[in-house]
Length: 424
Image (spheres, helix red, strand yellow):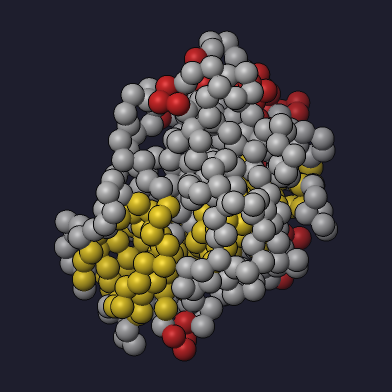
């Protein structure tokens, strides 16, 4: 069954108000498409991302272990491990995991068959107190090792300690997704690291989407505000963990975690502002813990998600260059993270639609909507016209990564340690 939305894109309707208030997903938003699932890998440690070659060779990252590759035969080669790991062809003692930080995004160079280049987003201790970095490496001919590491981005912020914040911990809010756009440039998403002034800063690379070449240099047509780092494509973000490109227009579309309200999907505009501003003493706010107001509504008992959204907006319209989201999950925050576009006639009316993986963990660790949603846009991407929850033949869980493979199938990684291949 499909549910068509208008206006605020409400999931509730007559069938789901009670379910939403209880923090669950309205089950009537489920389609009847028959899906096939093949389990590709099990027993992994927090798989975070995948990069799939046209031969079926699949590179994948595990947040606290490292980079590996699954060959078409099913054999797995462990390529680059993090500090303290064993069984990898090589290890990098500066790479580490802590909290949400670690080895995250991975992508193959568009010319991989010629240059054998792979790119990884990972946390490093090379510069105190730590940074998030984009690494470029060469994969050998038999897929058993990587070499020639070059860190093409070295200055993405990392949160080293919890300090006096009553929320979060070390390694929070890193972004971490990396993808090549249709024009051949690399896009990098970053998080605000619980830094109040970071998202709106023109020099700190946290809370941004970067567009760079394969050496880490800015795209010559990036247009951030005057005085900003030229690598910045958009700014004012909270924690972007999903980016994908519309197959018809090439437009970059992101999925972003909200602050206990308002997960958002936004079509990016060059130089645009995502509107996230958790700094204290702005918009009528006073002092906040560790100068970060990103969870300020939690201090007000009785606020519903709409009141929180008004008090601490995810997209603050005070900013003239703000990019309004095309979808905001009906005011809920359920961990809308990874994103991809479905492609191929096998998907029927979903050909060209966007899918987002939702991780949904509420207070006390309760699952509140772990699922994959299909987001259908109108032709110019100015509105969402339909949102459908996939009926999945696999257990529910935190969907950390969704990737469309060269074969047209959808590959999904779950925090519980599995990677599946899905197709109608």
